[in-house]
Image (cartoon, rainbow, N blue to C red; front, top):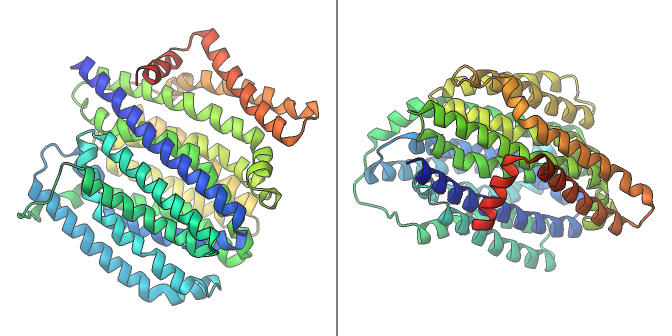
Length: 476
């Protein structure tokens, strides 16, 4: 059983990694093209609507994905009930947002948002159509289908978005990209998945799911509000251009963090759930996933911290350089987010979703409290945001020690080697610009030397996790 689970986990991690890395790579390329062609003002428009789309998707999903994946025996009739419930809820939410569009436009003082928002919010309905397929495939660990659906939708929508920008559709192309991406993904999920609808429907499962997922829904809503509250404040109190700078910095800091967190956590939930009756093996897997997370996130974010200004000048042009200080502050949150997410995931898996909710409540309260003292400075807002993740990581790590014999200090010792080696790598990268080379050679040398230093030092100290990750990559 252990060997089968190990091989299944490896395959799942590889496909899930392909999904996250491939999807984010396409999103990054399209994002870079759009940023070069469009202005910060255009990006500010989409940034103003981000909170409404994110909140709506959480409400429509209703926390049922986690609940259904954790549930042992799901019937086709129950899946149909979830499908119809999500679809009906998405139509209702879209109607509310449609009639709220004038108020949204007036709040931000952006007349363009009236019909742009009404178009963009259609993505909520399209997203609801694919939720059940995602649940079924995740529960069966069929990440190959999930990966192919994400990649194909990202590629198609990305190409069409670039074409629209070429024909001067401007910010409408950004809204169309989100619509096409969600729509194509739902379509591919239905085409590629082996699960198909049935005629029977059992709505009794909805009440049961709510009893488990209610706290997850509240937690998701609060996390999203806190995550995007800066969009509301900046969009209302500052210029649209400032919101564009902030939105781009926030988007770019999320890409590596989401790749690592999504790849590891997406596999961790079903695998660790299957080990709820074997605490020793569950602890071993959890510690290994923590080490792999640290192995990936520390060098990426610390390397970007040092070289981001050169990369922005090369890829986005100098008009986007104001996002560099914002991005560097957010690097702290980007490093801590995947580790914090792993701790939260374990609490949920062990049957403590209310505890996960409480931890997020504390962090969210800290964000909102500190925000009251930072309304006049975007920089101070981001510093407070990153520091709340530091506090939340220690809190979530403490509660992990309450359910597994794994203290926060043991967790820190597990990630400390990768932090130290990444710091050494960043230090070497920091001095490369002193050579006086042009920006292209400097950036290339920073990234190349940084990667070599990190891999070489880890290989010299005989890091086990490095060998395990390389073994997976070679075999798959």
